[in-house]
Image (cartoon, rainbow, N blue to C red; front, side, top):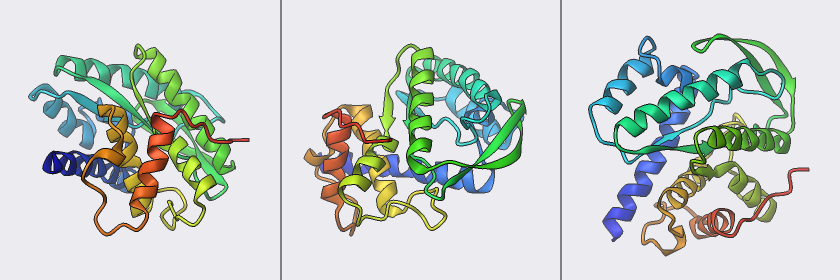
Length: 231
């Protein structure tokens, strides 16, 4: 019904915005969420252990890069720990595959331990290559977790940019999503989690011009198998 659809997709938006806030202020990764010594881990782990969860949405960190493997390896092992917590709480994880930076560069990090990570360089990489890398890493992690679902927000971004370049999906920092970009990501999570075409639910983002177009892109990406040109 309308209230259920509104609540669910607003919760998906909250996931996107929470991930944005965490990235901006503490650059959290899955590794941080599964370690009780960190700020977010100290809050997340008790919540997971003391409640029932059908689905835990996790975003493999943008700290990963194609230039080194230590962060990638740490995120993979941490994703396994998060899945164990999710399963103990009655559910499983869903991977949230994000888009590439639109600024022509990405930071390179090195993991000394899973929660001790330092930035070592900034390297050039175009948006499409970065999106492709993030997508491939998510598929790798999904396979390691037994084939869990992946919300293809990054692919949806690229499909939208190709077909509707007039939509500005990026925040001014050219990394995080704009409000309409956040709605696209939330819709991709919703469609993947529930197997429902977001065009058929009554809720649409309040006062968002083009929300219907965004929903169509998500449908084509999630259910139509539309793969963007990442060359």
